[in-house]
Length: 618
Image (cartoon, rainbow, N blue to C red; front, side, top):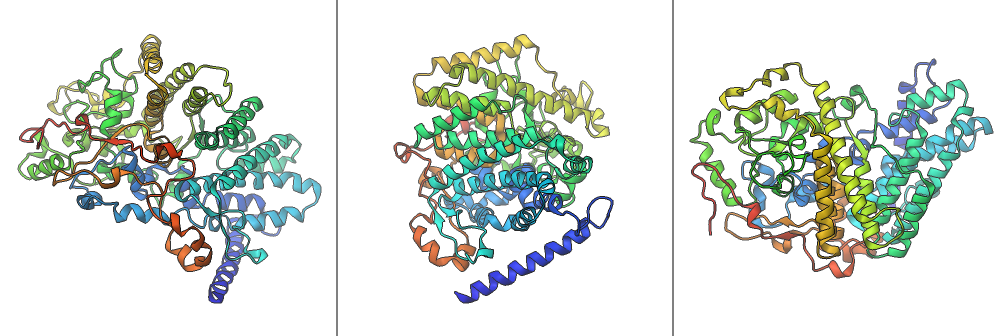
């Protein structure tokens, strides 16, 4: 065990030295900051712009599609299996794939992502009152990010080191794995403390230089501290609804406090990051993974089924969800066609590809050759048999990430109202309707940004008979937003469906369907948590080439601890070894749902219609 102490000390000293060297490089310009003057804003920016932190907070969500393979697959948001995607070939063994479990190391030892925080706090403690007043806010802001990191860690692992984590400087090298409910309670309380501290900070009293530095080094909100207050509140709201099935009284108190404070955002909470920043944190390309890996961006049958409400593979205003044309790219024939969850159908298509003329009947089974949206879109529309997500809606140069939408807030409040956790000021149906309307407006606004920043040659698609298909694909990539009457009609329909649902579980199904549609691939980790917590929405089961279904009802309750925990903290890990598996539910899953599984054998998700491909193997 002693050798591990020496190892940790060596790493700790190396990191501190490295940080000092980095600071000297980052702040070499004395007109900005120097390492001998005030490095606190720089330490904040360093932690915020770390590629790993940015990705895991959700800013580089498109990397999740590849890097976090297990989350999109298990949530069925994207990437249904087919043999041409090698990552899913191992689904033939009916087990949890190695590539999924490979994600397990991401959130363990979260404190290693925030090593500069102790240095920052020590510097602030040694400052005079005026200087401390202008610098303490950076500690408040980065701690909000840190708390979110820990809550996500609990959502993946259950018990984690928390209260003793990050205390190597105090001689605590082997932190205990803490009770997850105690962690969540502390996180929710800390969110409020940090939000209150930021709200009480009078930024206008800062020196001119202090205000300018805040606007520069706050790479998330450009010095808009109210948005930091709102961010703390929405993440606190999300934490409260997460525990609401097992601790409803406590959740209701927290939600009531949040509503009483009045600091939830009234507009979608997004960040004004610029392309140079997002390019830096994504190893040279802010859009590469989403555009290149086509087989990771096929729209799941469930979401397409909900959007295409009349199931005719076309968008009909008044009958289909207005978000269908803005979220989905049709296939090469201009039809909204889902991929099948029947692995045998996918295999048959893969085999047929060798004899098909790709320009005529093809199936885009390989990685795109380009990172740009235009080439990706044209290759898709020339060859793909299936519907993909509309990458012009999901990616643009002015908002490469989203933190929270008003729609998600309304959906959380709808669940709170449905359960009677506290008075929300509206009925559950009203919250649902507000969510749907807000989500429609949000996604069309994103598509408009995508159009305004589109690739110059995308205008080539603006022809009535693109590639002889009789379809204007430009209008399908950038659809006209339905008028207010059409949107209102659909919003009312969803509200009526909610009222007509037989019971609370059926109503919760509608809430979670709407959450899937609004969040989609931008928040696969959040959907992974919500699916396990609520067992909603109902999803299809994968059928393998031998006709069997996924074992264990397809559920992965949690991720195992990684090898670092075994190597460096084995004694403490022994205390939680009984949950070091994939089958122990996270603490926020109610016992009544332990035997409830969200996956079902549904023919709607297996049907296919392609030349020479059987529609059933039964």
